[in-house]
Image (cartoon, rainbow, N blue to C red; front, side):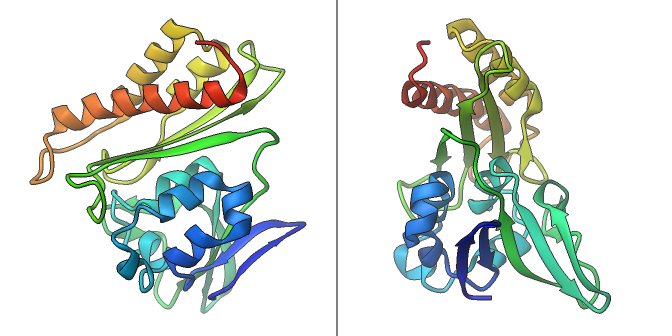
Length: 233
């Protein structure tokens, strides 16, 4: 449960692997850059020596930094309990703030991440009250990759954190970008991501501010990835 394995089945990370291990793993950095980026934003360096990937997910905070990146990577939760092992897509792992699908006697043993799409580029953009060491006010994970079957020639996965009861994907924004990636389409996708968010007012930010920042960071992430993919906005 404290190992990172990269092989013909993809990437498997034990639930007790620390966030620094994830962020520093050569395999994660090379093939799953978005996950390395998100792991490196968790708390401080000292905290990441104790904090684990499994803890970040099982705590089920809507602001969990690893969750948006793993949602964008189509990750799966490997769960073991009295009735044996079961695998749950991460999209169905979170059921509410502080709540997961884990039943009595069950534990998360690992997270499995399939091979990323060929030619993909990803970014995890986090906004906190301070530059480092703070819980996310919002987190936006954006993954784009070439996809010849789509009108835009690209496909997208966009996931949001800290703006709803659970981390979640933004499918309407993804569909807009699959159809077109010109300036107007990018703005429409950013607006769609903002409308997907269901934030609340709390001590860290207002709901209105969170929605506005979802729009801004989604736009920024998409434009950065388009630059990597060689597209013109």
